Amino acid sequence: MIGDAPSFAESSIETRTSRLYEDIHPFEDVEASIENYLKTLGVSPARFSGLDVLDCGFGGTGWASELFARSGARMVAGVDLNRKWALRLRDRLRGYGCDPVLATGDVLNLPFTAGRFDYVHSFGVMHHTTDWKRGVAEMVRVLKPGGSLFLMVYGKFGFVGEAIRRGYRLAGRLVPYCLAAKIVKATGFMRRPDLSILDAMYVPIEEHLSRTEVLNQLIACGMTEIVFRTSYKWCNRPIWTHPLLFGPELNHNVSARKPNEGSAS
Picture 1 (tube, rainbow, N blue to C red):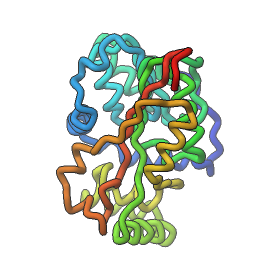
Picture 2 (cartoon, rainbow, N blue to C red):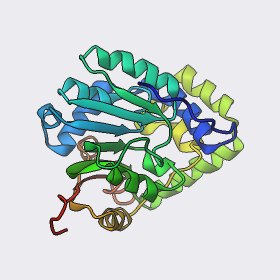
Picture 3 (cartoon, rainbow, N blue to C red):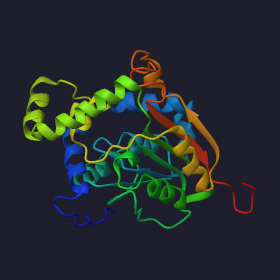
Picture 4 (tube, one colour):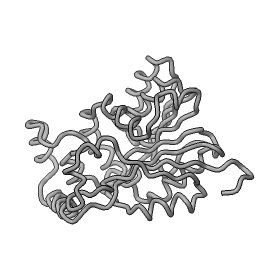
């Protein structure tokens, strides 16, 4: 199943975000993303075997959905703004014997019933929405009691990193996107999604959250066993995570569990 595309207005944040990532995501390394995810969590692919899994914002490559399908998840579902990505991902996942449930829509209004999934995942998405707290609450809503979620959102940058970020945002208001995109595509300069200059300059919304903000929202949603994990990818790049540059909390990789019904929180 692929849900119908919503009627986003041409100037809407959803439309602009979708179009931007259509340019960025095809250059993501699927195998590297999967390796980073498993090593950050400290698990093997068997962790997802037999589970009903939801990927909130699967993106152009759908690397997490592919991992779940490869790993023998009982059901793989996903939501993303881009219908073309859903069509492409569906065909890929069927190669693993999986019949995915992919919907075109926004992660702030997940089109699934409460308590549907054993594992709900969102990587690098909620900080680009109009209401990240609502997005987290939606993840929790569709999670089964006893189920787990994983969330990656941007953290607060160090002094130099924040100055660089602000400089990029200013440049994005001064330089037309078509010109910047042409240069990036021709040269390959900062084209990779994890260091994308187009993302940094032009994404409509980019929230940077403190550890406390993320923790408090998960607690407010009733989650327990909250663990902040160090990104395998970034811990191997000590210059980038220097406190004066982007800092050790460049991003937050968080796991949490929803208590079983009737259990103490």
